[in-house]
Length: 321
View 1 (cartoon, rainbow, N blue to C red):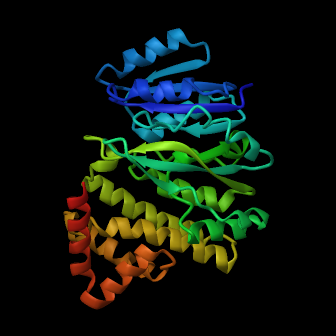
View 2: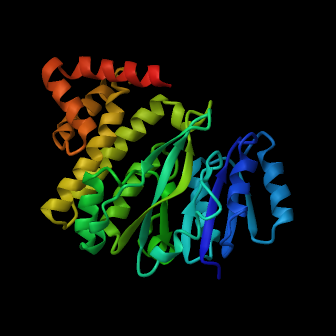
């Protein structure tokens, strides 16, 4: 069996797919299978995937009807046979040829390894996002690690900067909820509540491409706002119904506070009073403000009120895109 199963969901990314796949297939460490999941693409992405499948023996190709990112990831997981699972979005890429080999020393006895990643802009400049975890955390208990990683903003929602033991994944039923957007929020909390051993590497691993036109991450619909609100509520229930320490609960709520801050930026775009009320009811999360950004938003909310803060945040987010 291969050490890694690398799962790449594909949907209408013909301009970026080859660059993504080449970054994987050029790795100096080659004990992996590459699972391409064509999620009903209507451009040439499917043809590109077939071309690579015919060229490389370690590629599996799944063609399926469009079902969304969660559905594509789950389809890949069910075909995976590697010891560890990695997810790579098809418009992103690995940073260099040593990305996989740099993970290997951290695998022993760990369910999850957090990986360093950087934002990649269209002028080819990059900004590190996760690459400065405190080395002293390695000697802590798993709960102490989780608290430290969250409160230092090292743990982020993305599934793509995590290497996950496949047996742990299956045993804890960590499949992604299908039919929703912002699926990584709910999934991340389930992971944090079940993980027994976690580690991290500060070495660069992943380039996360910014603001690709038409990508899910740059398009915010009413469904996106609703699903994100629902996911946060669901996560709060998970946390409240779990037997965990006060410190871990506090850390998980701080993690959700950051997600809520993002949601708050789209409050004024919610098209129903009921949805706006549901979003606003969660504003108490801002009191969990270990993040500097959340602390600033919470202070602004107290100074000028919720509505004005939400409007200012929306303008900031929209002008940045």
